Amino acid sequence: MRRTTRGLRQRLARLVLRLCGWTVETPAPEAPKYVLVVAPHTSNWDFPWGYLGKVTLGLHLNWMGKHTLFRWPYGWFMRWLGGIPVDRRGRHNLSQQMAAVFARRERLVLAIMPEGTRSYTKGWKTGFYYIALAAQVPLALGYIDYRRKAMGISEPFYPSGNLEADLQRIREFYADKIGRYPEKTGEIAILPSSRPAPVAADGRSATMENVRKAS
Image 1 (tube, one colour):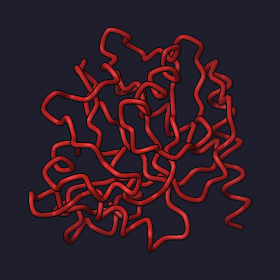
Image 2 (spheres, one colour; image 1 turned 180 degrees about the vertical axis):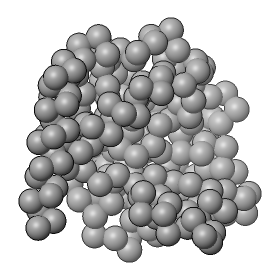
Image 3 (cartoon, one colour; image 1 turned 90 degrees about the vertical axis):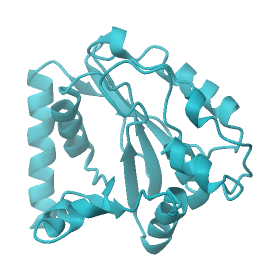
C-alpha cells in the first residue's frame, strides 16, 4: 500500500511539473547517504518546485534545525517533516553532531542551502563541506534551473579535503544553472569571516570555531 501511494504521488508530481513546463533531468543518486547541496536559492518559488522535484524522484530529504524547534509539543511534527535537531551553541561541534547522525542511520540525505538566504551573498557557508568530510559521505549538487525550467541532482562525489579545489568543481557545475532572480545568486566562494584552516580528508582537523563559523 505504501509503495502504491508513493508511486501515485510521484506520477502526480511529475504530471504537475510537466503541465507547468518543467522537467526532472536526472534520477535520484543511488548512494544511501550524502549531503545534498541545493543552489542557487533566489526565490520562495524554489520550495514548491523543489518539493515537486523531490517527490518525483522519490527522495526523503532531511534538514537541520535549531534544537529548540524540536521541543514539545511540536517536536514530533518537525521530525516527521525530516528535521534533525542540532545544537549550534559554541561548545558544540556541528559537523561531529551530524557525523554521529549519519553513522546511526542506514540512509540519510541531508539537504543544505549554502547561500543561507534568498538575497545576494559574497560567499557560501561551508558547513555542508565539513559535515560531508566528518561523516565521510559524498556531496551531491542539486539545482533548479529557471532558464531551461529543469531540475536535477549530480552524481555524488567525495570531498577531497582541498576546499578551494572542490569549490572550483562546484562552480563549474553551477556555471550554467540560473536561479529565478540571477542577480541574487550568491558567489561560490568562502566568506572572508569563515575562511577555514586546512583540514584532513576526514575533516577532524577543522577547529570547533571554524566549523561553527562555517555553519
